[in-house]
Image (cartoon, rainbow, N blue to C red; front, side, top):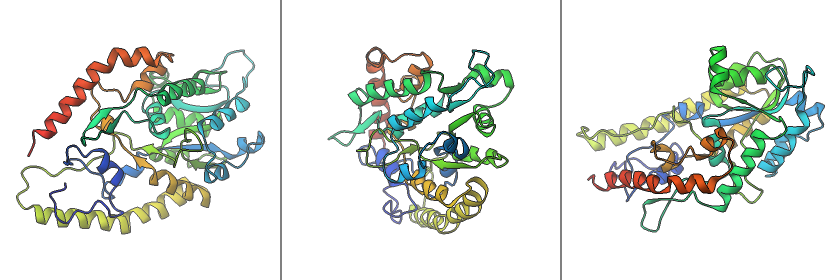
Length: 340
């Protein structure tokens, strides 16, 4: 991408965060710009039930977000106040009410992005290096485990649950939330379309921060969304650079505003503040080398795998996989360095 003369990643129609993350040894082969409209659709967000929030005396979550106090600890403190065994049968299932509903796949992956823990970081040599073994990651594992597995405060949609109903994970989460069975749900933005018939008002909010010191609200764009590349068969790089830059710029000027004005503000969200929240969410979209190039021995799914095992033993998990992960990521780096 850097060999295309007219492509300028400092322009607002490019996601510079993604470009920086995927630059290896000064080379960039994958990029995201506003031509990739589904990079909006597949961004992770949350929705909350305004009626339940009011019923339980929960302060205005929008204001909490704006004030920078929407943290994972505050988020967790809200959940147990809402959960209830509605039918009184002594068991918590999909007939009851929860503080949070989520599924157990890529929704859990997003907690690592939201809480600003990267799998890989760029070293002094300009190359990605494994950076997951941190005190922060240990804390994240414990915090997310508490969210998902404490006091029946969260309903986690599993593969067996969706298989039994013959629906997708997204459908299951949207259905439970729209039926008023959760205060908060984790959804990709395009799934919010399924809430349009919901009678109760809901708001769109970002995933929480790790703490108040974190400098912003972050989310990732799910792997279903596209990345762009320039094939080696392109013979006129100047022409390609002009066209791609113009298409992304024009999408920034026309398609993205139309998506905000027509789809997001009129169909999905129900108040002006939700649109401001979307600005925060989409402005915080980021990516990581360790996610884009994830493979069978990669580490991006560490948190998801641990949560599926009901385990908080990150140290053992990491130790057993570190060598294979380093070897795998190095193979990706070497492939880039070998290209001209």
